Length: 167
Image (cartoon, rainbow, N blue to C red; front, side, top):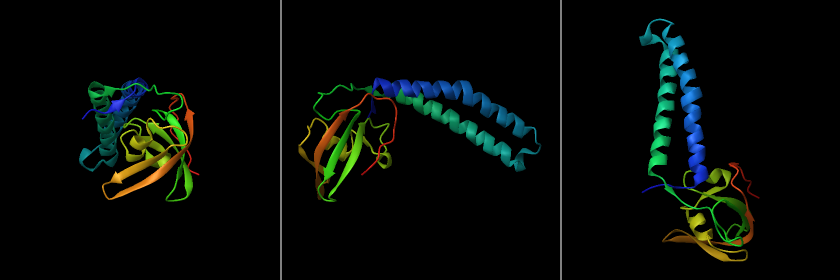
């Protein structure tokens, strides 16, 4: 399965790759060289730690490059009055009798602890395409579901800010 990403997501990944290659790579190579100069490598913790960080950076670069190569690019457009990608949505959770604010994002940016809900998550799937006032069922699994009522849709430009609050 390919990850669904926007052109903005691709741009962010390319920027991260560039930073990791041009800035971090040089710093990490220098750290390895400095640690190596401290002597016996078998007991040199700094050397092993520096080498580990360098390898983590290279792995992240490969991961991002592979992600860009295999990603399926989707459009962010939605009707102004419907929940779509990168919209912020204020909902009422009937079961908990409270409100929550979520931003609908692509799978690579999803982070429920920050209120960033993936379009592939049960909540994301339930909200997409609905309007203010709609009562939607969130199907978690065949045995459990719950209802949300959409109170507000905020059409936002994707500026990369990834923090929302929950009421």
